[in-house]
Length: 376
View 1 (cartoon, rainbow, N blue to C red):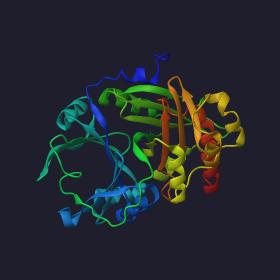
View 2: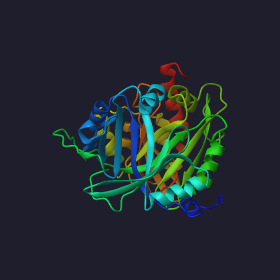
View 3: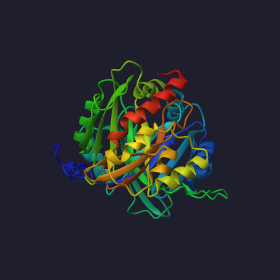
């Protein structure tokens, strides 16, 4: 199996749960109105839909943003006595729901629950004048949820109980296209059980594995395995801390998030240089660039690439390759005051891997940020 490419490994998934892609990602946040303004201003998302007291929803307000095929839902509680409030109290702002677009939400529920999935939402059909949406959901690691969303009989903007969110403020987009992958951090000894859960309950396959000998610096280490569904539209790398001289980035996340959860969201672009320049101009902060030697060695390590190296070096963009091509990537600093959630900007030029050759440079940059926070 190790001799197969990433694309070939995907075909070995048990595809009893066909998935068409990421439907949306829902954050629980302390102030959704302000968070929505941030994601519009900084990342170029556009207003799409809203739900709250004005639409008959009494306990929360939700703002839906869109850019390309990416939909973010930002939800805030309207009182202190809800599960959403408790989630924010413990974890701070963060991802609660990784919603998956499926052909049959009821069947997805039956297939996963029969294989050991823990119920989050029993199958339900929501209706309005635009048709119906069927949904169901199960828990994955920590308190994170996979929501199954079936839309084939719905012509509305987002979901029933949402109305169009018309705003005079809609900055231009930043070239973000779709969700490439979402990474989860789990606790000590929890990666292999989580991997088995994705294999048994979701029918996913492990397409890449990295141990602490591959992902380490002078001070810290971690382990990671990448899970994918059969068509490769949904990928979930899972990280676990490993023993090191000092605290790893995974341990820092687990301490400040106070549990397992989504560490970062990778969003794709077709022009990473233009996208990163645009995001930087809007105030998005990225990790520091690796030393000059990284770029001097890039042609030997990666081979010929289409891009000029100078702008990549100026912006700190990382480059790596596999048997199928190469990729370019750059990581933001955490977007919350708690050092938890961050974003990855990625451009794939054939490669289906996740930048293993960049791990050392990336994690040394993260450690410099940890040291500034006193958490290394």
